[in-house]
Image 1 (cartoon, rainbow, N blue to C red):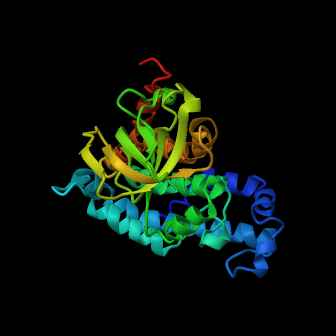
Image 2 (image 1 turned 45 degrees about the vertical axis):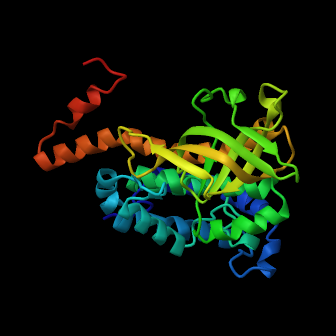
Image 3 (image 1 turned 45 degrees about the horizontal axis):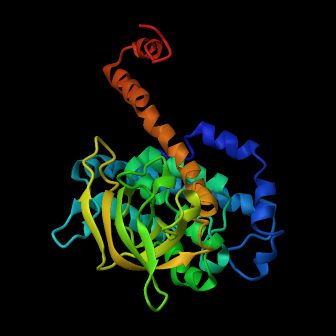
Length: 334
């Protein structure tokens, strides 16, 4: 299979013509980390070489290992087990292991947590490459903004608890936002966060349509202020997957079956507050949305697959009818 970075003229053009040097200087804080961490670059040229080396490695892994498993992943899908746990398709588990061993599961995390400390722009290129190989896998690989949100807003104790394992690929996470009656309108979230007599926070309620809701670390948008409606009554919490977190079902989707989409019931689940109360939606979830931006390039490859498939069909058929398909795209009249 081809290298999905080396054969992608669009990504390589952008890589060569965007000012990655300025981003490198900003991320590396004038390259002060080079004296502290062996993996940190000492200058702009070294940083850009690192970026391209990692993209090339992901491109090769995507072409040689991930893409050949994509069909079996989609046919097998995820499995909700009798004990409430969720099993990934075999190909997803194998690819996640490869990505962890390639040390690319902490793409934007700082060096001190074992991350690459790369710009989000380079991470977006990586998600496009992975999505071309397997859109289901990209849905999990593309959730690294969860670790980024913890790094930006959580206490040092919470950062130390989770971020090293995120960077090592030992755990994955989920953005637990949507509810049965609160989808695009997140101000309507009802899942309750309350404190017990000892001041410990607990979660109670249902979330639905949660991508990778079976992940080990869950960022949960919850109503911490029962007397406040709207966004100012919401706070952001982190909790572990545990005995009080119940996956009630997996959504039966038309495609992307290797990415589990879960309905979750929180039964007085212990959790910790991220940042300050009442800023869950306005500040923290808005920051979390950069994970959505990083995932957008992957959607591009999903939208392009019918075109790519048709070109392959006509190539194998040995005819020149590809122009017929081009003239019948939605923007044209057939």
